Length: 209
Image (cartoon, rainbow, N blue to C red; front, side, top):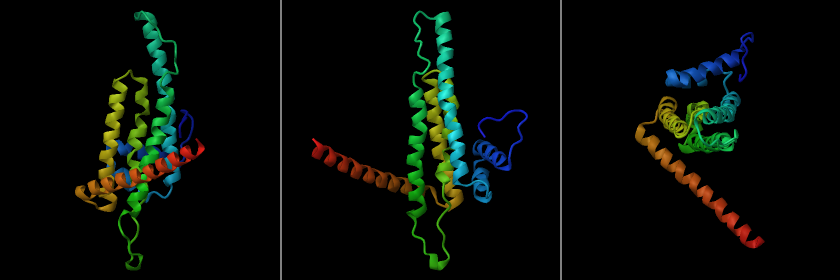
């Protein structure tokens, strides 16, 4: 998926993933429909697509640093010869955020009460994870200088939040008000879990000291 040479032949799964990535920007509703109806696009392949996009972040950051070094050598007075500046940040921001998003996805699946005896089913999984493909694709912006890259990455985050609204409306049939209530509930739930871990950590730290 990540390295495609001119002579390589794409598999059906790779074609589906490229089509999914294209539709998430051109036709978001079609992207959600494609993911739900295409049996070859499961959670495993979706995460692999995220991983492939994340790899571009440190590569883009290093390339941007090298370009900056060259420009500073030509036009600047001082040169920072560190091509790896900011690489760690560009690498960890995506998995950390996707971890949080995946937890929202879990809450979303079990948010509504489902009565299986009445033939009701749980909503489709990974809707928010799919929506945040747009944010993962922002990895290419690290090649640009600050604060332009941060601004574009911020816009990508907001676009992913917008796609989350589209996806939940499309898949679960929720209204905007219900979606806002869900995000408030999900945020409160995740903060509560975080507080529990912080409390346990402080107890262990106190006992060890």
